[in-house]
Length: 247
Image (cartoon, rainbow, N blue to C red; front, side, top):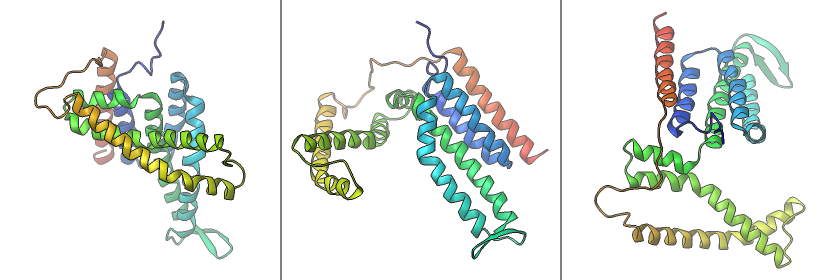
């Protein structure tokens, strides 16, 4: 079975791509350059087979933030070149330029890391960090931090389903959903505490705190394409720095 060329890459190769995009949009001042990363990321997402969920998540979360940030900069950024007015607010050319620059960077960086978590398994990413020297304790902290929100969401959905079976209304108007949500907080908190205790017992049973090197059945391998891409990111970053500060 043929592997997907994007999903088959090493987790750190995908992470370094997100870091490279972040560095590049900070170095290059043009907002057109930063905006150009978004269609590139859509193409990468399409190759990886996650374009639909990627675009859906961006449209539901990041676009709202971008609209708010852009309007705030457009109306409140100090500037003398007034290009229009709306009600009691004035739109300046400086605010427009800064709003475009800021939103383009937020879009590029945010989309890069959103795509990263769409095409990388968190466990693989943490294992890759551990392979390059991250202590097991630090790896567990990173893993548990990245998984805490999805885990609490799953527990919340389970509790809500249990409430439905007992005849509690959980769907409808905002008031009905709010009334159904607050009774779930107590069992959600208690189940989270219980799962934390279970994790601690599981870790101790596997000699997590024992001294000495740790072994793992799950191994990650780097292919030649991973090394080529990583060196490419580094060379391009250095080239952009040289271009920005010397040329």
